[in-house]
Length: 76
Image 1 (cartoon, rainbow, N blue to C red):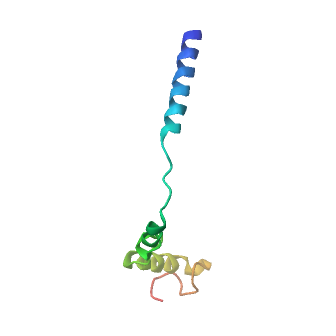
Image 2: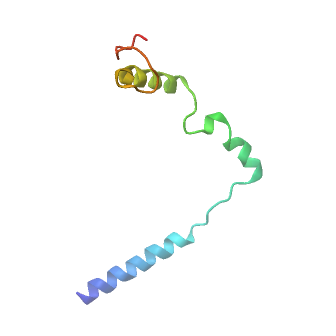
Image 3: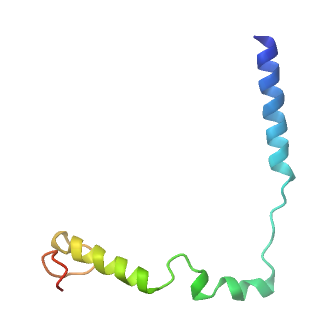
């Protein structure tokens, strides 16, 4: 029991030390322009995003979804 507890403690300490080894990279000033481009955004407006939004508000229109529309049939 004590040997198992000691082994788990050692493994925990080693794991925590391994996490501390990694260095967090800072964003350089010349990289900020690239990161601010629309393609790098989480919700970049693409055809897929527009189609997903259309499907969402078509299904949710009857319950007051994103936009006010028809009865959920997709024919808005």
